[in-house]
Image (cartoon, rainbow, N blue to C red; front, side):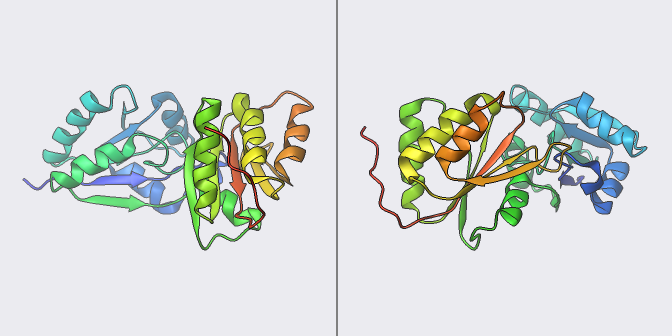
Length: 233
């Protein structure tokens, strides 16, 4: 019996119309869909009239469930790996299953599509020929400042995610490390209340401090040659 195939399927980050025709076909044809939140993924599948087996695969069960999924793949079953929104493996544990499948000689096929990183870059109007994706910045203030200083030293555009309750602290840290660089804060990309807000870190801080901060953010910080002091250790 031949082994199955692991499909790494990107799903919409907000607007369901962004799903690709290929992604819909694969999700219909596979034997099993592995996802972070079965309720959320089931809602996506139901919206497009897709029925089939769904199982959870997320940070806290990735080791145990990964073995189950690998056995299914070795037995010839096809599996689609999806995340709650966007491309699996980008700021989620999906890379581990992909690595395990590749090490086991199981075919891994990417089914590309939506990504908040690329969406934000494409509409930010900043140089994107060289950029670094940081994921989420460190929670602790000191580590956040030093990580931003290291990113600034790379001399390329920086893209990172940020949650609403840490946005103001991160913008203050960006202001300290990068200075008054023009940047973009993309909020709720592709969703009903999408915003692409441009300004310096301090003006963005004032803008979002004026009311409750809601939604998920993608920050785009272009490289600037302006001098800026590094934070003290």
